[in-house]
Image (cartoon, rainbow, N blue to C red):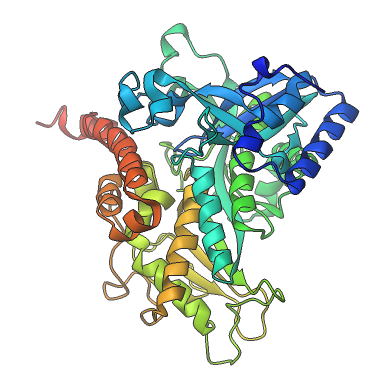
Length: 489
């Protein structure tokens, strides 16, 4: 499969970017061979925007060799939008408001595919899928690329002698689409007008009967994810109506973030093709709904022998000293990390006492009310920390980055965490988490830790993007306000 460079951008982007090594060439050859053997006609190139939503292009599979070498152009404005698809920065100005000359006038950035992420889509026959990193046309890495930020965080851990492991536990809601066609007037925002019904009625946590009701739907998702190479470890029912949970086996940090990014997009696409609507919004506004979260299981290994560095060596300890230092880092930077773990307005409505979601910076052994739940112990090679703070809609690359950088900071400093608690909702269990997205933006924007770890440019960029979202929300009259005050006052 060959292509003229004019179809894919300037020649030899991978070489000019310094990533065209033997390992990449071997992976590229494998991708081209599989695409040829499967007779693919199309390939999707995609990257994650600041919100973790995949954006990109679908191209003729005959261009694949050139795309892998030279990349493909995409408008830089896609990394400057808030969740309402508004351009937050002046894209027509010099440097597009972020000091990047290549982005002036919504100029192109280059999507360079990572051949190790190649998938063939079971629900779209003849179509391949590749995740990409962003570069300028001059082959300079784009500092606003969240996938690159995650890879850099994992590299820092590796340089300090730690191999990061993460296991995903993600919740979402799956509804029946009873009416799939929005009206003409709904084109701006059709989601709140969808005619939907429940896929299961909930209220019976892990009930066999409820699972049997939804099993035909879940089998569609399980089958296609498995064929795509990201088989779920489990598909379970949560307590809320239409609520579902997926778990995945542990893997490395960047791979886990790639996995989460692909799975979320895949689940939504698979569902829609079968008359369903999947949403990772934390709590849909339907009576009786329960909040969805993203629990991230994590540990670090010794790369020399694969030994779990969190596993304690005596029965009296919850975690090893390394694990305790890691927990101390997660707690110390927990508030300022919330913009990365919980980046939506709705996500902060999870943080309520006695709700199986955290509301404070606390940790405990096998305690599902604490932000950090320690699982395992002496003699258990699977000992790990489960962070229960995350929003299902979080950008996977930024969520994973926050954990790796915070945990590493705790291990480097040798910090000790506060005492573990059995009462995670008590006032003395720990400081409160941010109450709103606005609080989280302030904590992140004023964080010396993240300004040093990620740089002023990225901190200001993300805070500005999210402030646009928060400002629009604060200017909107909600249904609650209308009901509360319209007739009464």
